[in-house]
Image 1: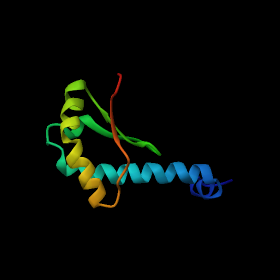
Image 2: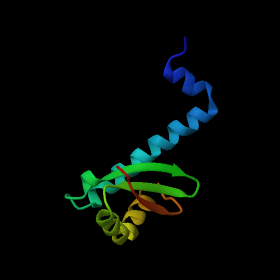
Image 3: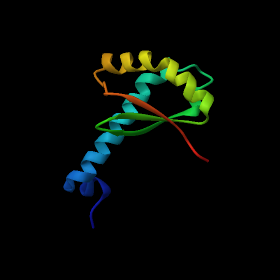
Image 4: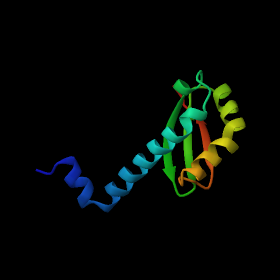
Length: 94
């Protein structure tokens, strides 16, 4: 039997997915201090792909606020050497 770590190591596709998840989480840790305290619980790290990074938000009002903060968030990501081509904001459907 393979452990999960062995399976990830053995599969280039799983290794790539694992790395994207790790980087997305690292990016979230980078921007969290820039988010207003009241919004932090409403924002989650989403998928990271070649086109950019997605933030998942709880409602449209939070999405609007994040759009206003996008230049500062992108600057923080660049400064941390985690820059992405663009930041997408998606409202989660419940």
